[in-house]
Amino acid sequence: MASTTTQLEVATRTPEGSRAARRLRRSGRVPGVIYGGDGEPLSFDVDERELRHALAASGAVIDVSIDGARALPVVLKDAQRHPVRGQTVHVDLLRVRLDRAIQAVVPLELLGADDAPGVKLGGGILEHIVREVTIEALPNNIPESLSYDVSELEIGDTVTLDAVAAPDGVTIVDDPEETIAILSAPRLQSEETEEIESETERVGDAPAASADADGEGDGDSEE
Image 1: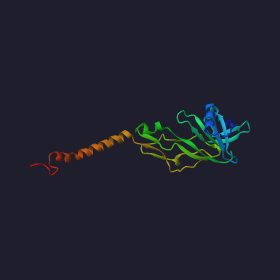
Image 2: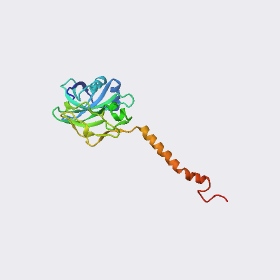
Image 3: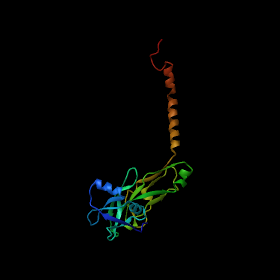
Image 4: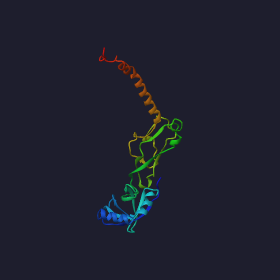
């Protein structure tokens, strides 16, 4: 359960278009916006390395100090990344009240897949269908992730979201009937079955083909 906050120093900035944003990035700064709550949207820039450390730290809440002023609690709303280098190029932060629940998206992890009988003994394939879920909780209670133990699954088993237990104070918002994982039969076995069925069909068609070859399948043979 997340219970700590991370500190982050940012500086206010005046939006000046994409060219100015590129100059910021070249200097090692990342542009961003804080919005929501009772305040107006506020544009800022932040050191890229400090931002990276803050986003990687445990805990959903970030205490942002703006131009050295008193810290403001926020959570990450969105981070845009460079498609090749993976660096953060823009970040959106959302003001929060620590006494008011908010919704957030957290990763859903499947544990013990290699120990599942359907995988270990049956050679089955675990399909991880849902990898993120929406939860609702107080900002300081937002977990880093949710998890489900799949170590008892057999081939053909299906797991729905209602099987996932959320920590105290956390509510899962998404559809509880949504399928999150399936343990399927080995694909090789399925491919072999299809190949056998295909061979059977070809064998079944053989007599007709033979009859045509002997000239008995149509009425066009010469006397």
